[in-house]
Amino acid sequence: MSDSVTVLYFAGLREQFGRGSETVALSADVLTVKDFLTARRQADTTFEAVFSRFPRMRVAVNKVMGDLSTPVHNGDEIAFFPPMTGG
Amino acid sequence: MSSQENARRIRVVVQPSPFDMGTETARLLTLGPDIGGLGSFLGVVRGGGGLVALELEHYPGMCEQSLTTLAEDALQRFSLVGCTIIHRVGRLVVGEPIVLVLAAAAHRGAALDATRFLIDRLKTGAPFWKAEEFADGRRVWVESRQEDEAIAARW
Image (tube, rainbow over all chains, first blue to last red):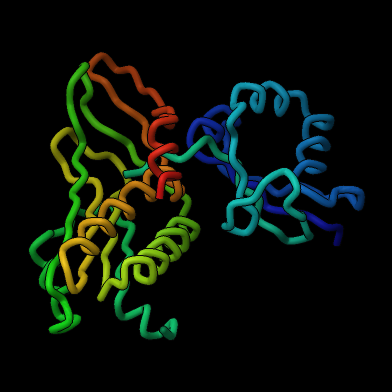
C-alpha cells in the first residue's frame, strides 16, 4: 500500500473545504509540512483558494503544534485550522 | 513529580454538558491540608450586539492533551497543589458558563497568578474555535485577537 496521511480541517477551514477529514496520498518527495502544502496546492486549485483566505492558518502534526518545517511521515495526522479562540 | 502524581493533581475535562463549580471546588480541596487558597475563573457567554449563542468546536484528543500540558506547566511554575480545567463544547447560549479554571496553592498569590496564567494561555493555546450566532441568523467565526495572543505571550 502506498504512503498516506490523514488530513483534518477545523472551524472556518472545515466549512470552506466542505469536509472535516480526508486521506491524502504522500509522495516520496514530501518531507515537511511545507512540501505537503506545496503539493496540495499544485494538485488541487481549491486548496490555493481556501488557504489564501487563511493567512494565519495553524498546523498540528499528530496532535502537536507544528510549523512549515515539521516533518511529515506515512500514517501521520495533519490538522489545519485558524488561530484558536477558546476560553 | 511523577506523572502518576501529576494525574492526581490535574483534572482536565472537555464536555458538552454543564459543570458544577461547587462540586469541582470540593473535589480539588480533597487534595489535602497543604491548600491555603483556591483561585477560580468562570468564563461565561457574553451577550450584546444581537448575539444569541456560541458554537464551540474543538479538536478531540489534541484539546485534552494541550490542556493537560498547560496544567502541568502551571503546577510546576506556581507550585500548585492541584488545578482543574473544564471547557464546554457545542452550542452555548448567552449567560451559560463556558470554561472553569481552578488553581489550588498554599498561598493566594500563587493561586491567583496560576488562575490567570491558565485562562490567558488557554485562550490561544488549546484547539478550540468559537462561532457566534446572531438573532438575525448570521453565523460568524470569531477571529483570534492579537491582544489575546500578546497576553498569552506575556507569561
